[in-house]
Image (cartoon, rainbow, N blue to C red):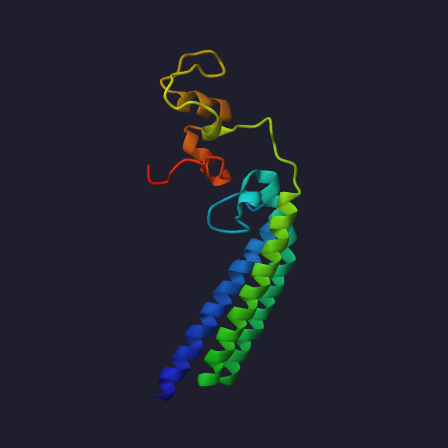
Length: 176
């Protein structure tokens, strides 16, 4: 029974340290502006995903909080390994909850900062502003098979779906 508690403590500490390492990396990339816009890491809200600049601003604002959350997790992991017993698992859980609170708080600040970034009105509007039923010509003048292909060529992407991360196609049904 004592071995089970020690194993659980070590597993909890490893999970806590891994999460701390992840937030350190994301915070570091965010603060220097090298975190690419993606679906998995960083501040991902409609406001931050609308452009690369908005994503970088949101993550640069949130980065110091990610460092603080990682610090909380490191301390929690050290206490988890140092105490042992059932209380060590409780310290790991409390550390994760506290770190998640900090991350949520700084992410909200990042979203507010991203909302302040001016929208790029001259860019691609992808799916939301054209007729999907009519064939069209691409910006270079060559005929395209569909309006989607023409508009995707205007956007510089291979398909209209590339803009879905920016939530401009949100008026279309995801089930269709």
